[in-house]
Image (tube, protein in one colour):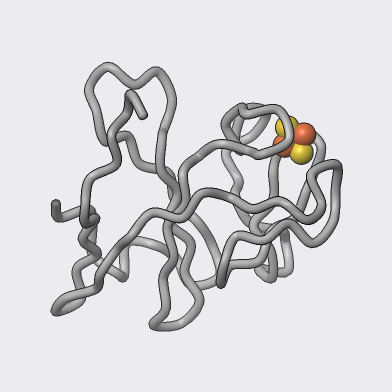
Amino acid sequence: MDLCGLDEVADGAGRAFRLGDEAAVPDLIVVRRGDHVWAYANNCPHNHIPLDLLHPRFVTHDGEWIVCSTHEAVFRFEDGHCEDGPCKGRSLEPVAITVIAGRVHVDPVPDPDA
Ligand code: FES
């Protein structure tokens, strides 16, 4: 599934996507650092709520960490591991993506009922 162009995710930032029409909130986030992108389910392992529940920002101001808006847990871009916060030691659920010719593809598409 073609998700977006690499250049549609700002360097050092994140962007949310809804994969299903019935999803009430974005269910996938993509974060980018240079030519590298990573995707995770939009589900904080602390309370299992969307990372952007309180504000639509997925990355700390310095662009170094993925951040949860509710209690400010911070996660590594590279593997979603929580380095600090109430869910320290747990991880975001990775979503497999591939970049082909400057386009970000989700493969396989996550099952929203899983
Ligand atoms: S719900 Fe994300 S840190 Fe608490």
